[in-house]
Length: 117
Image 1 (tube, one colour):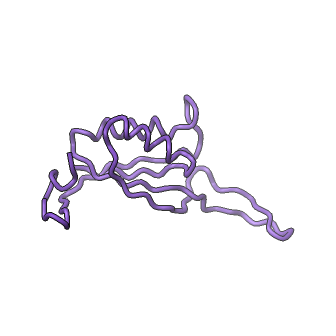
Image 2 (image 1 turned 90 degrees about the vertical axis):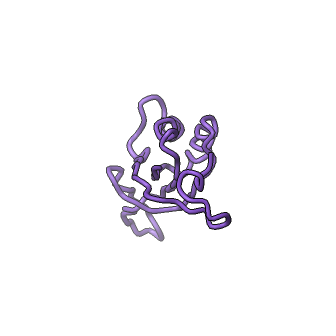
């Protein structure tokens, strides 16, 4: 089992969900997050005062998945989150982490069965 953590642009959520649905991955947790990377934020003006907005709004997707679906799911996130053919600065990152265990609270199922088909 693996945990896929993807940081993406908020406007790309629909296309990422659609790409994941095409490979039968529907279960995920989505959180609004702020972060900084190579994009470095932007300069904003508020009441005639200029300030630097360093933290950029992003979405964090967490997808617990069985090993057999990892590669296909990662490719789907890349396909859905990438801007244009070659991508742009700020398109995001994907982290694939080992997932030691999973327990479905309702049924008590453990491991791969708790994640789903």
